[in-house]
Image (cartoon, rainbow, N blue to C red; front, top):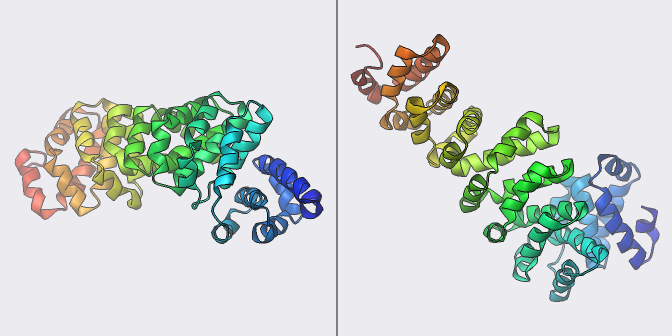
Length: 355
């Protein structure tokens, strides 16, 4: 921090590049905060002439003081063609040292004004390649760059998917270090904001490792996995069920317990496959489907759709053939559905409730 505060331009840039890489560590961040680093870095973003020094300082603040970043980011200009070209050349360099410096620079540059510029000059395929084949540091920072690009530009999301980014990030979730896994999960969550890319995450096997993190990940990984699964579930509920069976149905059950998730789950076609599981699923799938449908039925329009999609008959079968705990769940769903007076007579006609 002393060099950053008082060194010449070259020394300051070099020290900031090192600090960016250290800020991923909790202990190092605490040191930065404890020695007045947030104030120093904020001053650099506002007043430093060197563009990359401003970006490095901003990236450090994203790790150390994220609430301070929004307004500061708006003060930065977009990158020039020369600055963009220097990053591309660095990513293509033979030297690992040059390549690492360039890939660390990428997430620093990926502010909203730069995301589509970085895509245009060809950064995305180079980053995806480093997620697959780089050393551990390169993988981390390439994933971090993809995370910011996916957040900053809707156009970047399909470009990342078309260049193999989804598969590479899913692999990193399953085989990366703890920090790589966290960043890859966050990147997938940003990609899943676009439905077409969300579908790719499902097809490429992204759901199972995310669900596994809910059980065995660190607190940060669990939090990120919940958010990413929520993003995927809000755009792709039906595909999740079709591709991931029991675990995905259990996930939708949990997501449907939160009021804010329900409309998105229904809008993306979750009710028909959930109703199908009442008829054709195993005991565990039926239980999760019953729970999810009961939560969804709390909204009147969703209850109507559940009945319209044929839930009454399989519910009757569950009441007649399943164990007591599952019968109780089926009865709870029927009670939720029968509060809709327009449809209650239809439920009776189907025989799910004795006349």
